Image 1: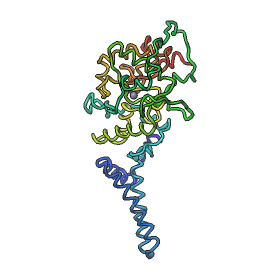
Image 2: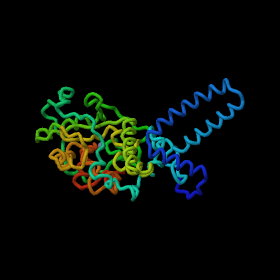
Image 3: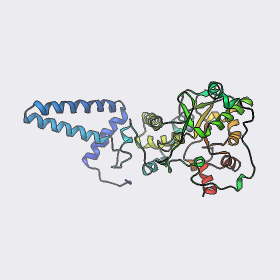
Image 4: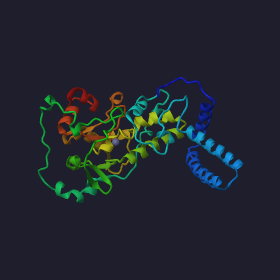
Length: 349
Ligand SMILES: [Zn+2]
């Protein structure tokens, strides 16, 4: 639904007012949900035992509750943002059309205005170094001749748009419904697409030979993980006083919208230096960050959200986020200073 300049009805004004309360007091939402359950419970009891007068009053109460319910599936100006997402605790599958609303960062919602450097810290989950995962993958890691072939004639290649390695997933291109792949366990709950595991291990092994200890943080994410991260980010911005709509758009700049994250493909990982589980721009200046930027392509990985390409990727500079695209594509992307979107323009048919 586009920005229709609707005349505000009494109901719209009521919705805005109630929305305001919800924005100021996020705790009202779970309380409200509990309230709905209680009201419905008593409604059934009254309908069983009470006389007509009380039934009538109870009916009015239930209608009032549902009007209040409507107030947080809609927000402001009669514009529907995302009926499911607006309930704020369960962002459901985001369709392509809805994703577009998150595409443009609103001028008034500059994320850097909310404490520079801090807003981009995405996660502090556990991470695993090569040492942590060595035993699981010893058979592969201990073989001597694991070397990825390199070639200098990649620039003449073209790529098939159906090649799984180069699949383009971003806010305009959500993951296709029929996308299928096999997961391999890196360690414990940590998984990735089985086809990229060997190259990942080899990259970590070679980094360690050069003296850099990489740690894997947050590889494959289920839809629910991505929803959790996105939801948490929205709440954080709303706590800073943003409206839901601005918080949604600003969040989409630093955490990928659920359904459009490469982590859900199993082809992307966040890499950090051992002992530093924080995802921040400063990682790009560490030895590990520099090594990855300059060497990851040899193993088929690219720095997916480079500095200076934010206007194309729609995502801030993320020196920790690496995406597998295969050695050929990665080499072209690295040598020609492209981002994946630009690569698609030139090389994919
Ligand atoms: Zn990432």
